[in-house]
Length: 258
Image (cartoon, rainbow, N blue to C red):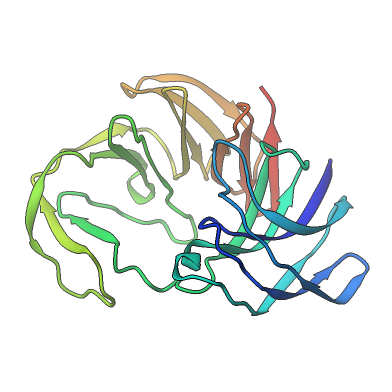
């Protein structure tokens, strides 16, 4: 599969950035890239950002060091800088990326943090437990890996039960929520890990079995698929319905087209 790698700087706030970065990529052992950019967002409706890129195919290693950046207004705190692997140059192309937010990335004074006391969780060593929010219903689904279940929490239920303690920074809200609705959504997994939602379907990856299982919103199993992954972890559904999954043991990302 041919892959295109981009060095990118994306600015969500439309403010001007003057970045400089060191890119270690194919045929560029010590490349310097200077970019000035504005943009909209990297989001579901289509991507809007500027980038420098090199086209690569096959397996590759790439890294970047951001060593200087400035922005013209305080709103530039929402900008993104980093590395992206992108299939095409189109606005709706599939991609994976790693990024930082640039100046202001530690400023969360408009953040809201809530602790849900009814939610319980048991971890499994070396197996990540993912979660996903259904923004339509407000249900938050998460893999309770240690218990072999998927649990869901109704984020629109409960009430503020007072100020939480231990905040390490200024926040708009840092509270404890009680009397929330929490229920087991699905059982029978050995080690649930990745989770995604698409078209009113919940997809769950089982790290121990290498299977991806699909459920309806009532928790009834619809189908399951064997991936052959040695250590199946994160999964996601692309904008065109492609199913992506990570095999941590093989160090690979695989896409399955519908």
